[in-house]
Image (cartoon, rainbow, N blue to C red; front, side, top):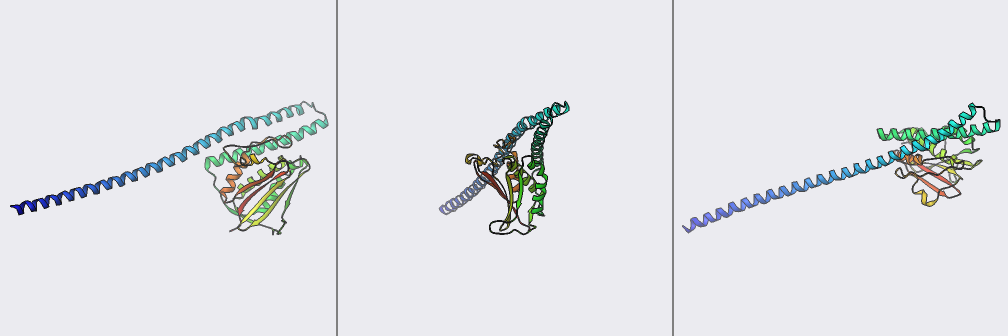
Length: 291
């Protein structure tokens, strides 16, 4: 009889241990599932936070763009309209007419440049900035942009100089880059337009090309107003667009440099600025050389 009770007790304990083991195993499975669910929820929260940040940034930039369009585009258009009315009424003598035409051209150039930046940026935000890299001659591209801006520079008697000989090397021609040539053309045009804007009449704006390992470095140098140290950190920020008036009181928005940063980074390069207030600025950007 004692033996039966003993065997029964052993059996009960065995069954109890099995039940407890299974229960413990199930609890571990539940805990693992809970941990996995928590990880999923955490990742979802992080993704939502990133998306909220992106939407807030886009909303902020959109509001800034609306302010630019409502003020910085309309203002020069009103100036242009007033000048055209004076010309139509023949209310200007020859000297006044010449000066008015110069002001008219300057305002049109600035407005076209601004609208181009807005259109390119808006298209990039709708479709996403998609780089289509090709092999292209950076020398030829720079020369084309200089030719396009010849009249704008001439209005301020500014000479655009393209130098291929550096302090430590003579860069062979052509130099083949590997990037999206349309995007790089936008960047070069923006940097040259800014250099013209901030240069005094009669000054030189110098474009230079260097080879730095696997990258081409393009620099645009002017001897204009320069940029204060405390403002240099804001130059490429889309969220806090920074701009000042040019030497001929040309207006700006700061959108161009922020857009240039996006374009250069999409092509695997970097953009930076060196400037001394009152002595001029040099903007540098890099793109990969031909693969």
